[in-house]
Amino acid sequence: MRRQHHDPFWLVPVALGAFLALWQGVVSIGGYPPFILPSPATVVHRLIDLLVDGSLWHHTATTLQEVVGGLALGTTTAVLLGYVLAHFPLAERLLAPYLVASQAVPVVAIAPLLVIWFGTGLLSKVLVCALIVFFPILVNTIVGVRSVGQDLRDLMRMLEATRWQTIRLLEIPAALPVLLGGLKVGATLSVIGAVVGEFVASDRGLGYLLKQGQQLYDTALVFVGIGALVVMAQMLYGGVALVEKMVVRRATCDVRRAT
Amino acid sequence: MAYPQSDGRLEVLAGLTFEVADGEFVCVVGPSGCGKTTLLRLLAGLERPTAGRVLLDGAEVDRPRRTVGFVFQEPTLMGWRTVEENVSLPLEVARVPKGEARRRSRELLDLVGLSGFETAYPAELSGGMAQRVALARALVHDPRLLLLDEPFGALDALTRERMAQELLRIWRARRKTVVMVTHSVSEAVFLADRVLVLSPRPASIAAEVRVDLPRPRTPAFFDDPAFGALARAVRAAIG
Ligand SMILES: Nc1ncnc2c1ncn2[C@@H]1O[C@H](COP(=O)(O)OP(=O)(O)OP(=O)(O)O)[C@@H](O)[C@H]1O
Ligand SMILES: [Mg+2]
Image (cartoon, rainbow over all chains, first blue to last red; front, side, top):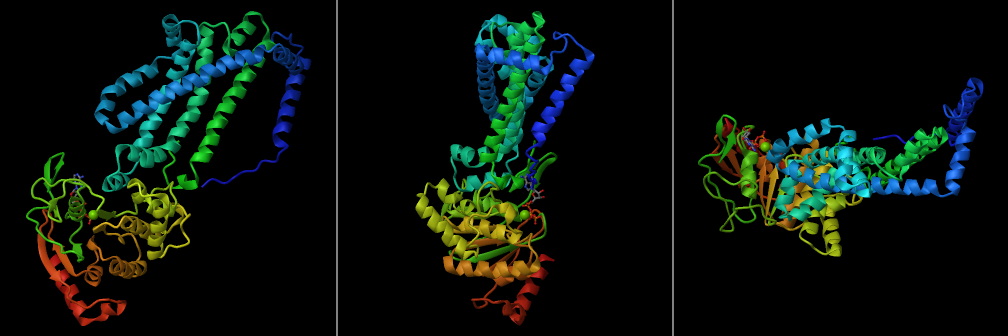
């Protein structure tokens, strides 16, 4: 069982303040030009500009759409395939070499292909995200479904449970802790997928913003873009963690925690 | 009954025949690994015999049925369900209305002496309590036949004796037909109308000891000379 830590409330703001002070110090003492290292104030100004003209929200919304769409697509297909593979070891043995091989190819290398096939719009980015999310969720689904004990399966058989009852009453709740662990990893990976997709070809999104900042030597813009990505990943991760807390009750202390 | 194994077949049960009467309490004892669990799984329909047949009320047992309650060697509870939700699982699967399921689960929890633990989770229970939850779950849908696989195997001697008495009390209250595997000879004689002794693998029935002793039986029964004689007879048959 985990112990709950309550950090003092001032810790986070103080750490943030110290970080900003250090940053400002480096800029002032080093005398770097803003296109090498902008000061915190410059970045905040840039942030306010982008907020006021609505472009930050516009780009963030685009990336968020890709991330969530890819997460949904990748998770759905991975869970369905994982469920089948967990129940048919032969299918797993046949498919495993291809699945593992596919992981050896970096997504960065596949992204241009997807853009050629599916255009420079939303779809190709959603597919990049789905691809990157797919494998960890697949593995976690298989592990989760396989973790269901034979005795509990026999129990459901004794009760003449239907296939759907076995899934709903036994397999889903038993696999959920492991699956949600995979989803947390997947959520952050999906953000990476979207940026990779946008780097290859795009006219909006946070990845596009980063590329623009780089080309224009608008380093403050790059900083704002990175910050937005961090916040997005944090919120997605926190969202899944929240769902985990609500769904997976304290019960999990005796179900294996495989993450 | 034979299991396929990497180096051929493992003959587990062979030439084994017996009948159990309605309402009878039968205990099965035998050396470890002789096939006691396999026997119960056959009776439950969880395993199909490679030869021979299992009949329940004259009909062949060709698949698991709800009319049979099973308590596994390990307490097999769902960690994400409360005690009451675990007990009502069979009713939920059988689509019994919620209110009715609740009433029956509480009744059973009362019978096994776990009132007040309805909302506890399995991780918070002792081994004995967990097995009692499993017993309540096996009884809640009112099966005809109750199969128990060393239900008290993991418990200490003291808890075990208390559980045996409670089991007798429940059996009297519910009038089930019971087939129970145990490795304790005295437990078998204490509980059963009849003790079946299995031979080593491939197992058949090495001996059948009838326990024609009065009920209700109390712990004083352990000191009865007739009890001692029967226990010795069973031990001799195990060899
Ligand atoms: N699913 C299976 N596949 C192959 N062999 C099995 C299987 N289940 C059991 N066996 C073998 O059958 C034999 C009997 O097993 P079983 O579990 O019925 O014994 P048991 O009498 O219940 O033992 P114990 O007293 O230790 O519980 C053992 O040798 C075991 O290895
Ligand atoms: Mg056994």
